[in-house]
Image (cartoon, rainbow, N blue to C red; front, side, top):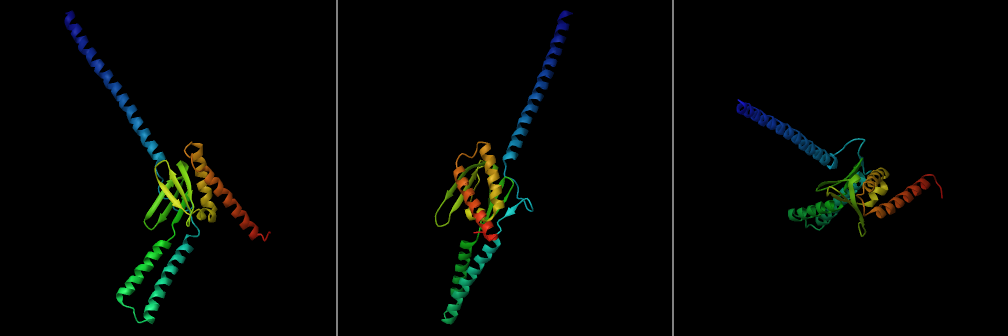
Length: 220
């Protein structure tokens, strides 16, 4: 019965081939799954970090005083306008609402953005929410001068923030965190535009820090 044996062996060989193909497919699926997992790890590594609170996050020390100044200015304007209307006997609900709206708009214009930074990230929170960048993945640093100078930061994830350079001058800890992240970005070959801006800002911050030390030490 050679034919039957050959058929049996052929069927068995087919089964063996199927099993080998199934095992190969399983290994291939595992490799693909590993690639997907690696992809997920890559996305996690470049994802924006979650908000950090406590010692790991440093905040603008001037923000609270600037917020109080904005509130007092807005309240002062509102009080002055209401006082003038009362003195002139022209105050009515419509005018009171108008002056109140004006004070609210003024407060919104004076509201200071709150800058917070940690290891590898920097966030700027305003009235409309918070924007955050990865300082260790920066691709662009640009300074725009004018009536209100701004430092523009953009990272490889596509996020972008703007902040007052004076915040970094007044908060050496924030500047140190930004500078450390920018160095990592340069080492990774990401930051190709803005090194000169950071160098000039660093020199300015160093001069300002030295001047404050001399003033505190009563040195001329």
